[in-house]
Amino acid sequence: MTFRKEVVFFSALALLLPLSAPAAAQMSGPDNAQNFLAQPATGLVQAVRLAATKYQNVAQAVRDGYQADANGCVSSPDEGAMGVHYINGGLIGGTVDANHPQGLVYEPAANGQLQLVAVEYITIAQAWDGSHPTGSPAKLMGQVFDYMEAPNRFRLPAVYTLHVWAWKYNPMGVFSMWNPNVSCTSYTE
Image 1 (cartoon, helix red, strand yellow):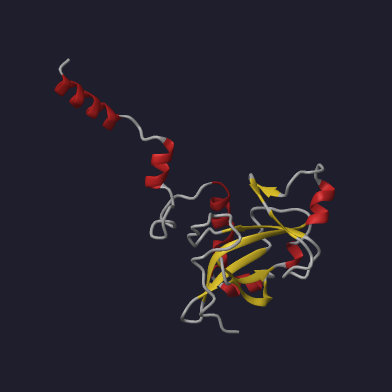
Image 2 (cartoon, rainbow, N blue to C red):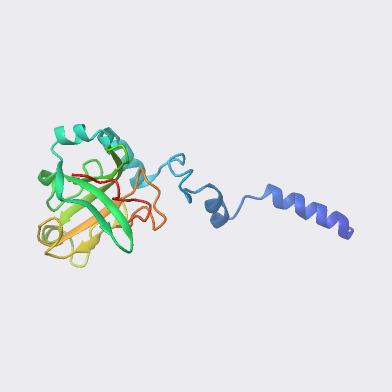
């Protein structure tokens, strides 16, 4: 085979081979805010979207037992914000279920409306630790929770929490606590 034919052959072959996993993920993954919601959800994000989409309307959340958290819109000067939490205290204990998040997280919009951007799973650390093998971290569908000691913003004993940014792109990661793309600037009580 001549050099020119080899170049043509290997160029054509390269077009037929599938992309490497990292390259394919970069091209098709929810790696930017414009296409995040257009990407098919999988795993825990899919479960969250199926279970909590009805809470796009805050009134439905209130009817189902969620109450506005007294902390208002939670933000950080360095890491962005979380937003306004609506918590269902009746769901907080030692277990977690993807279909029943303990918290709903809303971002205040300029028009005064609240937009559902994430959910938060919350479990009491002592209850979780008492019902699971020693050293077993709190997790849901493979996602490990963050530990939050007492005193905390929930006014609860130490808890494990997990945010799932199912409706708002988070450059820090879908399961990160803070989201630099969320703002509290439009929040009014």
